Length: 243
Image 1 (cartoon, rainbow, N blue to C red):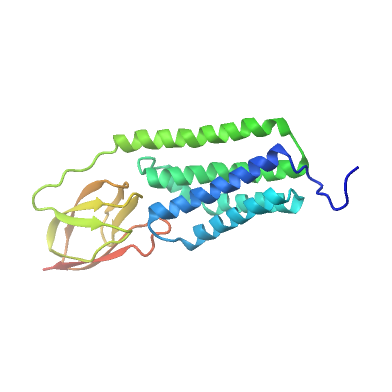
Image 2 (tube, helix red, strand yellow):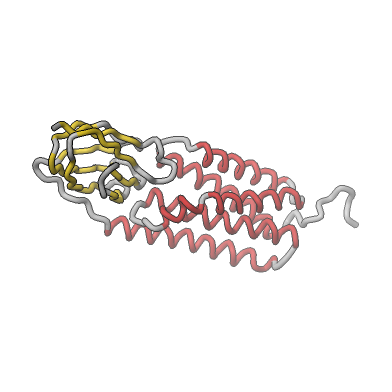
């Protein structure tokens, strides 16, 4: 006979275990994303905290409320991060951007589904294959990123290049002469950046730990150059061009 106040969901449900494991790994993936980003991103830190808290809650209680809260939170994470995730997934050569993103998306989808299935007590036999498939997808993402990063090349610095060192998601202010300048942009960060110069057609992708040469003709004046990766809005430098 079912004891009073017992949960309506099976506390040993395979889907519950998948939900807990998915939340715990999601929390770690989001923390890793901030570590390689060398800064705390409030939204990501918030999701990591929520995922960790939900993992504890679901592990201790298989109540439908806990499971559905986990499912809803994971779905929100996936949807809210789609714009940034889409761009990162297009650039597997930047391992530190691609792997945490692909891992978080896979785990978010799994948790969103497993929380609902645990509550509904549906298809318990599918829990283990689903977990295995998720692990396989995450592993595939690591392999794809590894191959793409090895294939990515550095542009070779040449005499007369103006070196722009990119560290800790920061663009330095520069003073350069008018005319055609060639910039050697050396990305020391593990994550991807872009470089756009206002008033020009320069729009260059710079994978993590790589360098790119960019030639541009500049008239005297002041130009702002930025990284337009979502979350890098503070990455702005000023280029003063002397006549």
